[in-house]
Image (cartoon, rainbow, N blue to C red):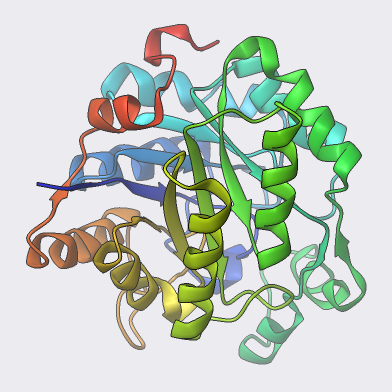
Length: 307
């Protein structure tokens, strides 16, 4: 029976504390969210960090060290660290957790793009912290910078760590960029191509967009990749369902969507994992264990990390 890898993205940098009281902020909350997701069936947990005092995004490796060892000690789940951080950060800052902690997997964005979060302002009048409103408002004039030089810098810096990358593609051109780095031998198969749908500035969330992304990846990478999807907001479960039915993998989590059904905030990351697990099993598929995901992605193993 075909196995489906569930990645759960625990907190991210898109949403702010005002948007949901359930968003993990402190290291303890992030660890608890990751362990809950793993217990619900997540094969991989994708991790960002936040400053405990105000929930703002940070790439301070010391904060990652407050939850990564805790998760590793309590679960065999695959740990995936961000190199995206937040669009306001320089690439050198974004790189540090993956460079220093040497995880099995790290995310890597495949292109510069407009990254519009400003539409979220229409849903909230009052914010808990001073940084939240300008962080959202200024995104109408913000480019998330991921140049060819930036991508090569991250790949080359981490090459001796044997970290594999969750290759994040927000548009069709990003697939071609990934193929370019395969040709340069900076990315080696099997690839984990994470297609992102429904964020302002990237490809849309129409079913034809999903099919186009899959068809293009098939043509570029053949049998050398695993395809996964991320649907933002209300697109999360519908697009994940499409991916599972089309032979792909799935990603859910509070980084990507705060919701557990129409009008209902998800109280935990585990709730979203359970929801998509129900879909996967209803399709007569099986959820991959962490060790099965390691085998499918040819990862270096949980004992070969830096934490």
